[in-house]
Length: 349
Image (cartoon, rainbow, N blue to C red):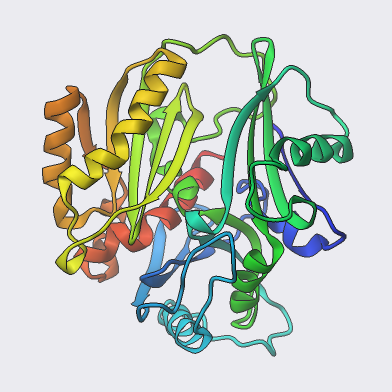
């Protein structure tokens, strides 16, 4: 499989790091995630993929406002202090004066970018021509200037068409997150959306991007789908995969009650349009659903999905690896599933 990244407008540093293939070697063994409710940092063994240390810190309301329309870090000091404290907790106490920054994976909110899935009859082999085609395809779909955006795309041929996944974000948005971690002595070698990283926990699909070379796979229409629902307050993202290929990616806001508890009916309303779209467009039935970040709301939501759609619903895996990390059990899944997904993807590389 080929994944290409490019950045228009002559600003190469952000674009070339944006959603780079996570299995490039040598792998970073440090990762951090920034969300609206908190930051997290983890360190793992590059050789075994086992988690060695992890730490999460909450953020005050309003410090981060995830959006692809404006800068996201609204109050820098508490975000920097929280991430610095989390890194120090896992044994990384470094600053901007560090002569040799440490490579790291950086996970940012889904809502900070826009993800698109589309098919093309042909796809150029030359990167410059491919980027121009992707820009043209996205130009009328993004709420920002596509010519100066950071763009990452993945194109894979299946049957007689090219399936393209493209992610685009304004440079100013990506650069804010990069500058934050750079100021703490890290070098963000890869930047990835939270739910995309979490999909690495789907062992049964062989990872989101199974395979190592372009192939002409057969038509997967009619095959069953797997749904992943991830809540990162206040955003709920639905991802649906079919034969290991991402078919749908949708993020909506969901109101949460006290202690971020979700109403099962609100989750159902967020999921139903996506499930209907998948069944209409791809002719398959969703047989399994995995939920992430719902906390104490999870059992009620899983029961509703099982009752209404007769599918197998379960929490997304990964918590077992966090059991010995001395973390607040209520925040393990919310804060660390994306980083664990990165580790799982690494173990399959």
